[in-house]
Amino acid sequence: MTIRFVTSNDGKVREAREYLAEDVEQINYDYTEIQSDDLAEIALAGAAEAFEETGGDDPVIVDDSGLFVDSLGGFPGPYSSYVEDTVGVERVWNVVENEENRRARFRCVVAYYDGETAETFDGAVPGRIVAPRGEGGFGYDPIFEHEGETLAEMSTERKNAISHRGRALAKFADWLAQRD
Ligand code: ITT
Image 1 (tube, rainbow, N blue to C red):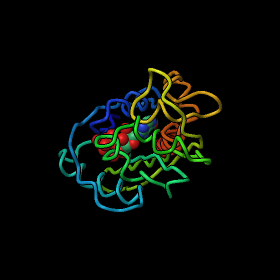
Image 2: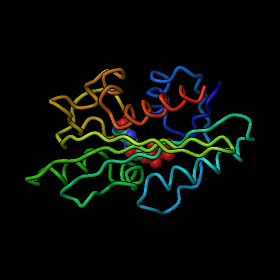
Image 3: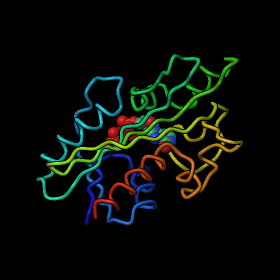
């Protein structure tokens, strides 16, 4: 079975390919991100739209994820992509730098839709915001530290073993295996 991963983010696809046994085809369709603070709602709406838009032959997944900083009331959260593009990762670090509490978490929701079945799988990883370190990963990885390492300092395999996306993909893979 081929799964169509509808995303413009190559980093997400790299991690899914490393994790899933199925073929993962990247589809660069820009689905509508509805305004909501619920990642699952955003991802499910995106998956339904993307399934219709891609012709409805193969199941699709979309991934909606974000960085939630405790001292900023969960910001940037569902707006992480917009904030990365406008403010930039380095300046998110500058905002959090002087906070006493630098705790944060990444959250990820993978939504699956095949025309009949809609399902979501979520994952989270706790960590703290630090000065940028590391060359790997993507997005906010250089400023997010988990157990002494930033996600940008980890291999894709190691990141998948502990990350929000890895946890969501693990639930998705188990669910897929049970359906076969
Ligand atoms: P698509 O919507 O096309 O999938 P996107 O990158 O815009 O791509 P999101 O809307 O889910 O994806 O936004 C997620 C934001 O959070 C974006 O700025 C990512 O770079 C960042 N992000 C998500 N997962 C991440 C991870 O594992 N490590 C670092 N940053 C991550």
